Length: 185
Image (cartoon, rainbow, N blue to C red; front, side, top):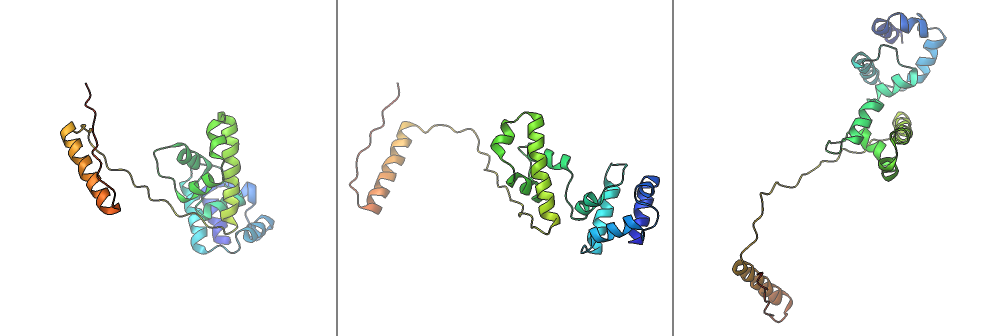
């Protein structure tokens, strides 16, 4: 705990010590120790890295830091992933989306949509922090790009239809029926 306290004081300076005190063994330090109990050193290091990388000049609260230890992206990042229709969503954004009524979200005005998203986000944070699993990221496979299609000539179309009719008749023992294509004028 002392190392964490020292690192947070180095990152946030006076803002950390004035908010939580200088002594990791004092009340705030004991509360942080209880709040981070069960996390691995790697997870806490991940939280410190996230704190260093964040643009926030204020130290995180204990719940926020705990979420950082789990690699939970910020609300702004999740909002961007949810709203970008052509991007791939990360596992956490997929979890948030699964807890959001997409129809109501898309139909709502900006303020209401943000409240709905915030509720789903907070619910998802709590789920992960309590040990819940993240969904596996989906692999999106795009359809192959096909060039402009040119309609077949009536002769080619008739030949293919006849071939298909023979195949159907052969497989299902159906009589072959002549099919006429009407020629377009």
